[in-house]
Length: 178
Image (cartoon, rainbow, N blue to C red; front, side, top):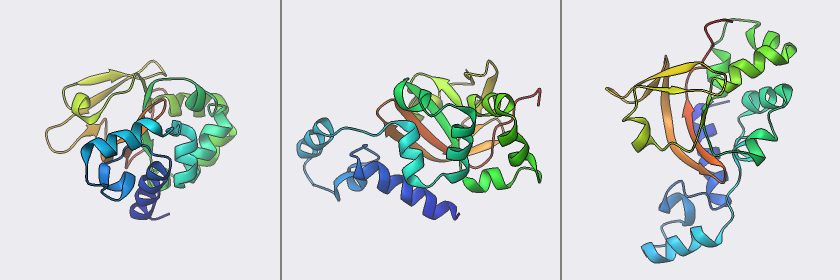
């Protein structure tokens, strides 16, 4: 899937469910800040997993389902998710995704490497040097030239969900012990 189309789909999905990606994405530039705030307050946002599902992150969605984490990313939180694109999964060595999908415990370790407790916006991320993930490992954060999480670059930040924040990344984060 084309990253540009995937990111556009995510923004459209968020806007369609009143997640405040931006005032323009939300309501076509309603114009008045107060009016936009009222739209956002009245609307119900989508949770992280359904937002990713609707936006077309097909590999991530399949992985979350295979690991049994869809309820966690829908009903719990708040979380910050560094969501790899389909292209990020495609960059893994041949057979890696299939192997992970066949091994739910390993897959869960990989996926939880992408999740941080709490809703952390880009303004907060850039002040950090590292963050503890839900798999128990820490990720390194470098905000000198853009934002890097370990070896992944954040390509879209601050996608709001009802149970946290999503930042889209271009590389899958892999635990050291896999």
